[in-house]
Length: 361
Image 1: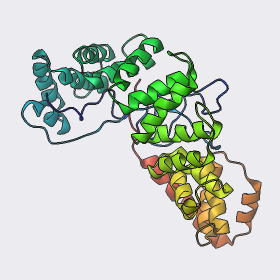
Image 2 (image 1 turned 45 degrees about the vertical axis):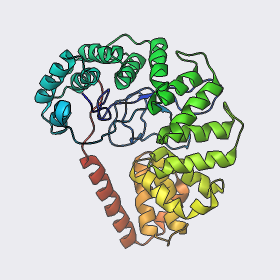
Image 3 (image 1 turned 135 degrees about the horizontal axis):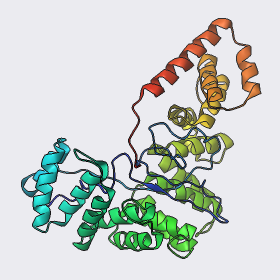
Image 4 (image 1 turned 60 degrees about the horizontal axis):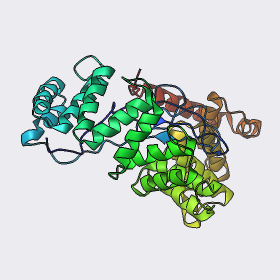
């Protein structure tokens, strides 16, 4: 099979292992679950489309993450991929099995994905791992990365962070961005690799330069704390800005807060309401409550008390306590309060109506 970029190692909606950054490095909350690239992390639970409701500070989390790119249309030996892209999973499986029998490395990776996600067939983590292993043996970097992820979580195989680190490193040596990020996290934690903040910074910075938003977010924290590198507030702000621009919810929230505090890039200050609203829309309660103040006070936008009251009501439903803001809302007219209540209810109904994404069992 000639098509390389369309390969996925683990479920589309469940493809990243969040790893704990612990010890003296105040980098992240302790978490461990599989998530998609553009989703907000949620501790110790399968991911859904809504970000973690408990996130009210700008501490953030760090995740072991991967990307599933997609390139040119499938032709010739890529018939299995074409069938897969069209949702013809059983046909894709049959074609991939035929290609695997011919010794095609990437065909094994595609079969592993089908068994991992249970596409047209029953999920079989053990069988998926065996195919990923075969792909790795034949030199497919995506298969190598897939078994690293499986070993890191114990999906279809006994959890083994040391071996996961070995496989992440093997994939990282090819320039695989997500493998570099994962390896960096393991070095940072001293999990599967000896704790080494300098190596951690190097690998995570590499992934950040390749465009991974979570890596950019973490590099910002590493620069902020001087972990594995010299402290540099300007570099921290620049990387956090990049992660926010890519839509990472916790980065949008954290950077908006930094801008409010005067610690961000001056040129980005007009983005305060845009970033805060984006994070609020993605379900971060702290962002929702701060958005209320932005609307009431007209920070880089026209004042809009009704909109502000809407966000406060949403944040309150998520457990955020703020008597000062509640008193401000109480002073609004009855008509405006009703508008805000209706808007908050409509927002909540819309979010609840969104389909949840599947995740690994």
